[in-house]
Image 1 (tube, one colour):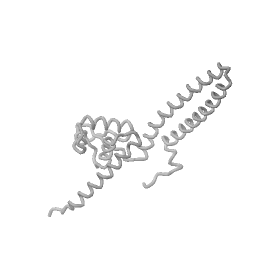
Image 2 (cartoon, one colour; image 1 turned 180 degrees about the horizontal axis):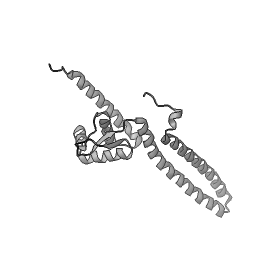
Image 3 (cartoon, helix red, strand yellow; image 1 turned 30 degrees about the vertical axis):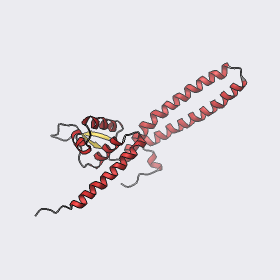
Image 4 (cartoon, one colour; image 1 turned 90 degrees about the vertical axis):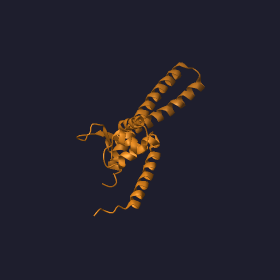
Length: 183
């Protein structure tokens, strides 16, 4: 006897998961990820098996080129990885299911690059203003330069602190202070 399928609840399940995938997609902009790539991550996350680009295209009704671009972006952020299954010739991809790991990696990638740039810019600006300070006899300008140099040094101190925070997140040390939930 064939097993009775609860079609109504299967459909409700699919709608509910789709709604959550939309939430994921919407919130991915916090990480600089477009909603379409966020949807791709959501589909991969809820799929029980690795997917090919064709599978993703069919699931999302997007072009294979868009899927390839999206997968590459997610792989660069360590949110998706390629995998292998014997007998399958096409590339297979699966989501990183450890959201803590994804966050720490993505946070580090995004924040480290920008913070390093900010430190370099602060150093360059400090160097220019110090040179101006040493070359001018204008007391009002010297006073303004001293004031601005103090602000820049405070900014640089903040960026150095932020680099330490990024290190704590990337290393996983953050979990000593704020433990993971669940598992």
